[in-house]
Length: 219
Ligand code: DX5
Ligand code: ZN
Image (cartoon, rainbow, N blue to C red; front, side):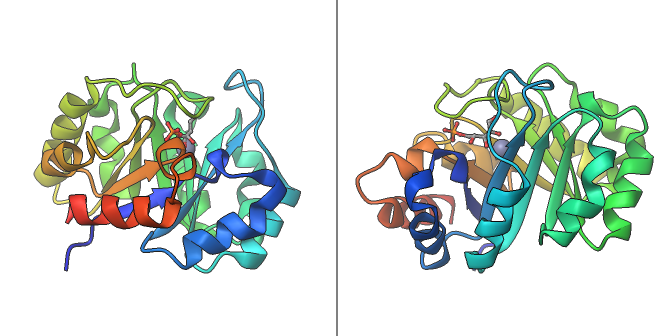
């Protein structure tokens, strides 16, 4: 059985029926719950914060993969650990002392993730690749769901996979933004391990079947 993962992004869920949508993910073949936290400063949008994450965590049964799109994320590492985050990703572009931030995330017992904007070169991670559990490659500009996939992502996945292999690292590669059944296979073939999918799952007629279908595609 393959280890490739699907992480539905709750950003595209129906917030009036959040428990229902979290339980749909629980009962599906999905692997992780992807949670997008936006502050309106690092990205031009505000999503939801701690009280909503607390409610999600009360119902979620799978790995909570929290993607922070906020400035100065160090302020909230402990809070997100207490809220039940299992993977905590910060943006490369939002951290002055990224190595220190990653150690702080791990010290709270979470997997440490680094998200890269589409313009950020993967080779900037070379000196710390062995300290990173998950690299989240943004395949859209962060801030909104439902955007089109940026094709250059394939080149970035391949370059990152080479970097990981060269350094004997165990880092997972996650792709976030514009993932559909059309690009899923090519992404895992290029080296991706985790595919985030928001709109493609939640805006489909049958989200459970859509997740099952994505899992079949990525093998
Ligand atoms: C965008 C978020 C994504 C978003 C993906 O800033 O990080 O996780 O929910 O949504 P789709 O799959 O609709 O592009
Ligand atoms: Zn995300």
